[in-house]
Amino acid sequence: MSLFKKLLFKRIRLVALTTCISVFSAIVSLSWNTQLSIIINSINANRSVSGKTVLNTAIIVIISAAAAYLLGLCSGFACETLAHDLRMGYARHFAALSLPEIENLNAGEQLSRLQNEIADISGFFHANLFAVADDLVKFIVTFSWMLRTNPELTLSSNIPTVIVILYTVFSSRVISEAVQRSRQASAKMNGFADTLISIFPVIRLFNAGPFIREQYNEALEEWENASIMAERRRALLMSLSALLSSTPLLLLLLIGGAQVINGTATVGTIYVFINLSGNVSGIMMNMPGRIAMFRRFSADLKRMEPFVSI
Image 1: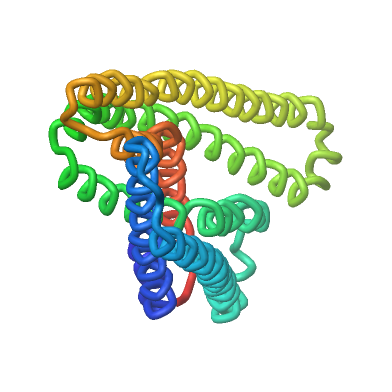
Image 2: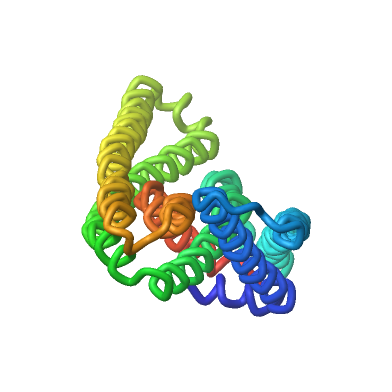
């Protein structure tokens, strides 16, 4: 992960700015939900909603939209900048090699890194890096607020989250191992194709075409089987994760409804808890896939580290 740290520290100001906007956006979201709770409780108690409350709510909505736009703008720019630094570092490494070192390179393996590892790392930056960071910020801010508002309801409805986390750790490891086998088979197949190009005259001279074709078909079949197995395991484990992730919401409805009937909680509070439940337990639904992607991202960075100059 040293390469990842180098990329982040090179653009630390941009990364820190994006993280601060994410924190601000989460706080604004909590403010909006607090105002919404006040309005719902006023309507439930047959009281009129004051103009000041409506004005504050409208201002918070505008600020929330602006924060979401700034977050998307800054995160997109930061991700593209990190991906650009990675590609330029890869090119800078080869520009510094001597001619004998260049002649000894396996073009097929380097092409595989360019098409697979660098493409996957750039894709992770754009699709997951700041999305995961934003989910983590929302989880911390929302859970702290819910714990302060109604500790009993927060703890009792989120106990199953611990089970989901344990399952996530197990399933992500299984998914990651299957994906790595698929990646290794792909690199082996690409390297084999480059070797075929290099020794093509020898193959023609000794009439070794049938033997080489058999070896290549075995490598191709190994890659196909590994890819299919990885996708099947991912679909199965993530489906079970989605089923487990619905348990906290069901407990929230049951326990929260009982508190409203007993008068220990208001309808507005329960509604806000349900509205914010996705920030706490909902992010666990896709967590096995995200952790598997992060492990795959870490493995790709480890393989690319000797070939990138930052």
